[in-house]
Image (cartoon, rainbow over all chains, first blue to last red; front, side, top):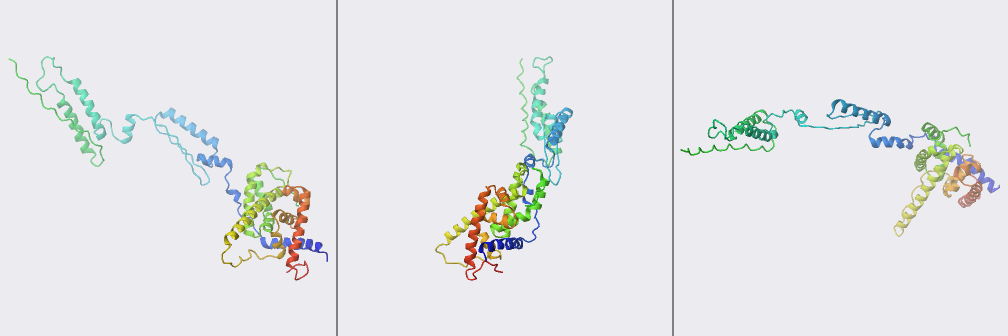
Length: 194
Length: 180
């Protein structure tokens, strides 16, 4: 028997069945390449917008932001965009234009209330108004002794603020309170000139 | 080689079809090259990952399955090279230690299949493509991306090596007839 023919015959007759036996009826498993993110999906994942058409989502966010700014002009905007297929993503755009009124109203206090953090400014403004309202020393009739200072005037405001604060919010932690201005001693009565 | 279906480069659906159509044949080829089914399955998956990445650049002038085969054989060749280096490292580490019992054979197989696995990977690939899948020399050359004359040379070298190998194993029997 020709050895060469014998080898070829064995390769032809045996190799295929041998490999078939080793492999069996292998059903193609779930392909690994399916778990590779495509380039576009990767970009969207980076942006947190998987599943949302990129052009639509960015246009929507921009339009909503512009519209809200035009109408509201100063409050926070939050635009959430949810992706499909079990993946969610949120794009948030926030603009803030805060002023004293909005921050006070957001925290639930009026600017004239006795909130501890406002007490100092209340007293300061009271000092200014008391100074403006005090009688001139050259006024006629002359002011009574002790009435030229602003101590009493400011003291009323400070006391009112303190009592309001203590009474309304006992549980809320307070900042170090501005010490109440001590009431200045009444001016000594000048000696009467004869 | 079977008539190649029409595939559209870059189409995910077409690549799925290619995967389903060629998985078994590619797995058989790689089992012949790397030795065991589990390793071959790993290599096939890796090959399809690489093919999927290159799929948009695939040119329909070459049969898609031959193209996947080429990628898969490259993966298997790299695997065998790494494996050979790992075995060499292990043997070097084991020098001077107590001899241990040889590892059991990975899969029960015939002397012919074992001899094919011992061939260099490009020769084993040529033998499997020719005798298992029925490729012509030209088709093997197209699949592996080499000249047709190179394939003829590889097949001749592979046969000579197999003859020597199998004659050595069957010296006591004095024949190349199947040892069943």
